Image (cartoon, rainbow, N blue to C red; front, side):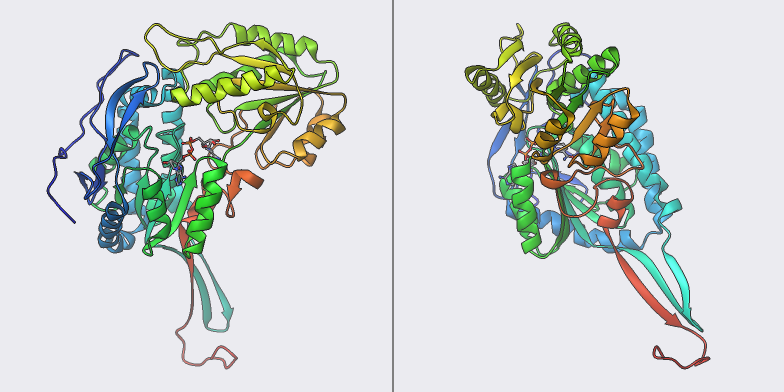
Length: 503
Ligand code: NAD
């Protein structure tokens, strides 16, 4: 590994305390406990603050040689780390938690600036990240294996052993929380980690790397490699990477799942979603309007579980009016942030244009949203009268857009939802309707009167069908199982007290 570097020894704090534009240190690799420039790649990319559409930092994009350097650093550190008692490993997370709590505003502003979400949303993201760290802190109390005397004098024992060096790749929409879906379980499980954050939002994970170091994590146990597709593919292919976690769009999740699996590693790859909301006439108007609007406009609609299609069952015009009235009051810049890039803005507007052209009605139009300071804005948008086969009703738009599909009956709504491989929620005051919907939908994460039905710790996060390639959930106990392997030890200490086939 080359050591010649212009990388600083620390990235320093993010000093912004408002939305006002601020710059941050360039994103570099964090390998073996130090900041490093890429070995051979000279490519860089601007990290834009989407609120201004202006670069707040640059990211130095790495390649396969940097992945190899990070894996080597992980390999060198992992053995000793894996021998630390689990409680001592968890204590590093206790200290990380303290640092995150102490610096919660700094982290929230950093998330807000690099991603664009408003401060309160960014703070909620950091709080949820802290909750994930707390789950990791609790593992010593719940991760005991099993032991049983299976025959006279013969005991079988199961222990959770580290895999070695493992890797994770994360999306742009939750720069801090999604990395923390993976890290606590993987680290407490005794692994070394190589992470590749989204090249659009690499800054929050840099602060995380520094906090982990300050919390006492030995050098090389956590490594960051900056980059894009080339780095991801190198992680999939690297023979010393034993497990591969991914969160991002369905297309990429499916392809990297195949690639990592073909390379012989265990993989769990979470993809996109398109949350279908069943709204029936008996739904509470206020609860529904508040929830639906918060769900489709929150984080500018850039949440995998954001409300996306509203299945309006029967006569629910009074509810749709309340949804529209409430959404119309949302002020871009204050109540909601921008979308991630100009390309995303154009893609989202393209879906709205196409639906309008195909005969749907734009009852709330966010296409003209803008701000004096620039940035990538789309206001809340409601498209009524979509048909189930329109792209706006089938594909993940990933913006503040609600596509309304009108259906006469619950049965027809099931037909549409079941043909769509993603999440689901129902709005009703009837227990019977709620139970029927929950029993019939083809979705792994479902809500009753909840717009963003995401399980919180200790429950595992993970969808079904095209939202998840691989088995299990990425958070909670499933996460611990994913990042560890079970060693089965059969032992006998007494001298032949009994003869049987195990003797
Ligand atoms: P993305 O798939 O474009 O990128 C995710 C990661 O993959 C990034 O780190 C990126 O650098 C890398 N990548 C991009 N293209 C690649 C390629 N061709 N080959 C290999 N790697 C590649 O996703 P995004 O735009 O950053 O994030 C938004 C998507 O993530 C949405 O679809 C959203 O639904 C999904 N998401 C899903 C969950 C979930 O839990 N299922 C959570 C958050 C986000």
